[in-house]
Length: 352
Image (cartoon, rainbow, N blue to C red; front, side, top):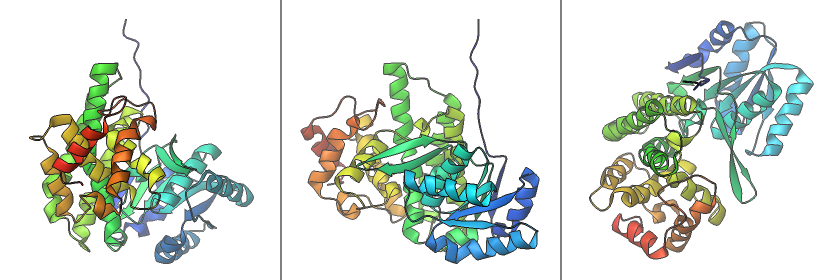
């Protein structure tokens, strides 16, 4: 008897394009959100867009409050929850990059209220996913939370963000190649549940960026459009899967280990991009797709070597050989790979 069931949580509205920040009030009205909005942001996005958003809400009769977060920590989530309680917030808006969006997402989930994602940089796929990433000491936690009710991605703002943030977002998407291969491997060897739909969507998203990498240029708003759509697709794939599997495999484990060994050396997206070159080699050998992954990263001016990341060769090898210890997630790394194998993969691919 067939008894399988699934509950997929997706955003109700995804609004992308030039000047769509000015549509925020209209989007909120269509979601039937009521009460006082709490805008969770960080210093730079506050300067770029918060005043514009606040003025729009005030003109519509709302009384918005603001919470500034400096770092993505669990204590920051608690601080936002305290502010939300103090101002009696009806819903939360995450305005900015990864830090305020993840913090607002988790706080809204804990408070049981609506959450709207307003990214000002295309640096990661958390703008639409149901997960938040928070450092905790020498480790990083991926926390489940409800995805945003709506995403408002103004490509005019995103195109003006620092280029390295956009290339980090691109690299994060390109790394879906190896994440899906790890998921398929875990399905075959460990009977981990696999979603053909989510896997295909994630692979298609990575392929789209690889094929268009040479057309993604600094300051070009059309490029911001392409990257945001890819990030949305990746986030939707995770919502369909009910986990981060479609976009997080061995390359993310290596990145998380690098965060421990060389904290603050490079952006998350750049780390997973470089790591995906190596993990693709481990999957398919010297004649595999790692050439395409590397060339696509190079085409958008993203790092392709440990040196580009500002990480010593010894640190990269240590991260690769110990990354399997990060979490109980089966990948091509298995129960760990030998140092000689890690050195060979990183050397052949030019990462070292």
